[in-house]
Image (cartoon, rainbow, N blue to C red; front, side):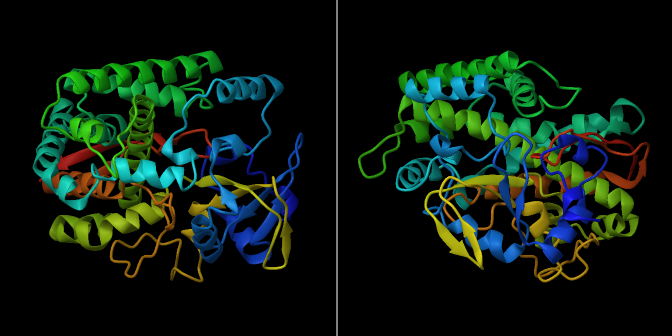
Length: 416
């Protein structure tokens, strides 16, 4: 294989499988690689664990700011897309926490961090555990144990968790699922919609958040949303726009990533029935090492983009201001200089310094504790009820070079 065979711009290259052979080639022969682009200047690809951990923390040189290009999308925008982005920027449209840099990012993160402390998440455990048990029992009883793990189980708990977290009524939770799929999965034929429909989904979710926030301002409750809206840090509060954009970020990112991590975890357990049996025999493994291996293995967000702010030299490469950079977490999580036997799924792997949450720095995932709790309780409740699994078909993957997604995973779960 030559480097010229690698095409990370193509979502079709990720439909059948993640092209791990490409990333292995890059890590071995070109760990800092300038990827060509048919109608643009190309972009840098970083594939090694060490480099990604360093660059993820260096926000001064490698910016996430939307005005510089943001964190998603490696190809140059079309004239129409660029005009739309310029119009939004000129109109002063708000930016998500994901697409701003310190010190603005630091202020924003302080304001929302109060909702994500380990104590806050621990207080949600009983509710999430009860929800997980109810979801699993409902799915297993519906059709003699035959179910789609993605849509019947993995998609349900993140929706309930985010609905509970954001104060969304239970009956509205599937609106979040629909909006999220339209916004994230629009390149996949199953979810394909026009750019106008993607924009409409964003607008509908934004307006929903706005109405929810307005209600909590007028009628505060003893919930996390009210604490976020009314809480102060250094005399500052979340603005109306801050909250609305935070709602979008959490509803989309928290739904997509956890759902796909759970789905990849079960797909790996189906391929490694001895490891599933080990979890049935000793569910404590899930919390001690199992969740981390699922995260390493699944790496739901495959890359994030960064944008170079000033000329620099890095390990013998001249990287210029304005260059596009991609940090491939899914490659770093298979780096054999860090992980022994990285292509083996090992629920007892320890240590496990994966970068599924971003590898540190200001943009380290704020929902880490919530995602871990959801995965822990769902797998614990699942293995308690399903003593043996059958795979009824291969996983159906999402057409995306950004989200490592599974759309469907048909199984039969045999009751304990």
